[in-house]
Image (cartoon, rainbow, N blue to C red; front, top):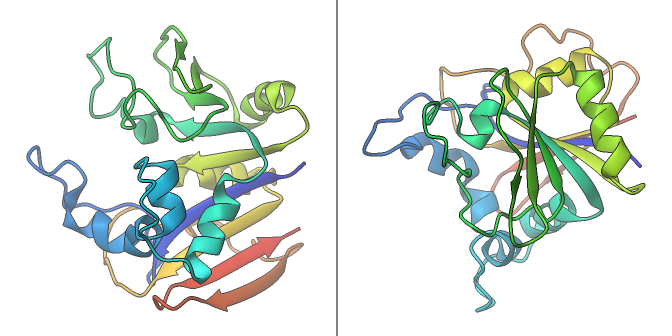
Length: 213
């Protein structure tokens, strides 16, 4: 069992983008940041439910497959679930439709109480106000000995890293500059201590950096 993080970041370290509008809630920069990942066959199959066999099958796809493998529970922030964009909508069920790609219990960190949401594909969203350690303890109880993935966003991941709770951190560094947003590495000086680092460059130009305890 490992506590894992998998993120896409820019060359200048940003995890989030800032060009969203009501008409374009993800913004154009988000597409640039995650283009290599969403272009993989695994993403198209697991998230878009596209069984046509289209999508890339190289290094990026290998990391996309690893993203989904052996995960028993997920932890994410309220922003990743969409509560910051839909704070007053009691019927909001996340960005992923009725068949989210998780297939495991998901713990959403929020200070606003909400009833759990059970989806048809094995995903159940639980909402809790908790510290990183408390959330991890809840996730470990239901993970069945498999990994717990901290999905994001950037602030939540930083909190788990700062608390020393992450066993494996993988970032796909996209060859783009964003210039603004929320940076992953802020206030994490010396994070590399205690980890072994490895890198691999994909056909897309994405640099896959992994810190492993």
